[in-house]
Length: 141
Image (cartoon, rainbow, N blue to C red; front, side, top):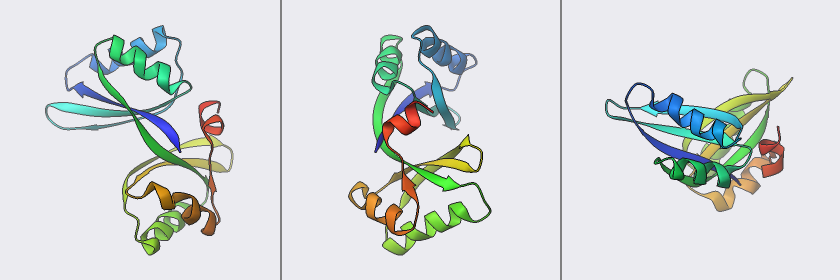
């Protein structure tokens, strides 16, 4: 499991830039960023090189931020690779609450998953032939 920073942002112009500036000023590098929005607020999910320090920097800057445990899975960058992973979770009866991907290296993508049963992630990923990534594999990418 790795640490993801979840940040609640008002849906106002400049809030995303200010959040990124707060991390930059703290010398934090983001490895991945995804944002879901509604009319009133957004939820930013961040993978950073130093998640604890990143969360602290955001809280100190006045943001509502928390650490969320997620898993990072190495996926071959080929058609159908991600479908195979999701099918393995579906067959095991584990719900994927949300997911997002980023490219790490040629031929490989990293999928970040939040699931409803963290205890079974390791076995499901291994049995399906994928690799669960350690924090240092993701934070230092």
